[in-house]
Length: 213
Image (tube, rainbow, N blue to C red; front, side):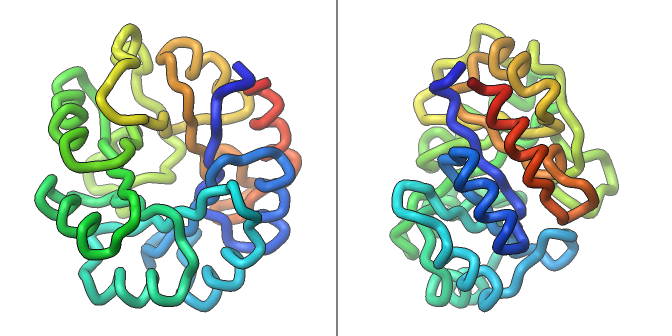
């Protein structure tokens, strides 16, 4: 279990970044989506990104972002990856990857077996995939809702063409079982290590990391 990498997403404060790095996170995520309680402006994100040491990937989560919005983020924040968490088409993923010269992770919402078809589709154009719980109908947030999906859908399917990351409702209590059941070698958490929406908890971050040891 110790070779499972993890990402702490939706960091909003310097002590949260420090806690994630000290816990051994392989990735840290900054959210650029105004409806989210974890939303940052570019100046806030730039300041936090400067705290992240080499070797920890800095990821910007965006939702159906325009080129202009991405330009403002990429020009101000030192990033290692863009995470597209909206309804971006495969063509749009390719456009973003080519235009901005950064690896792209595409989020794919899963609720039932047929949703897995998108994994092969986006494997053609994305550098990594984030397999997340599909948000409930009418939800304002495309992710970070604290919802899990049926992990049995991924059992025995751990070999896709691209590296992938499991997300959706993960907590210190269930992440080890989720990784075991799905074969995930990378996991992503946001609300599962928070004391309130958008407020990360250093103790929970440490417990999440320890559960993967």
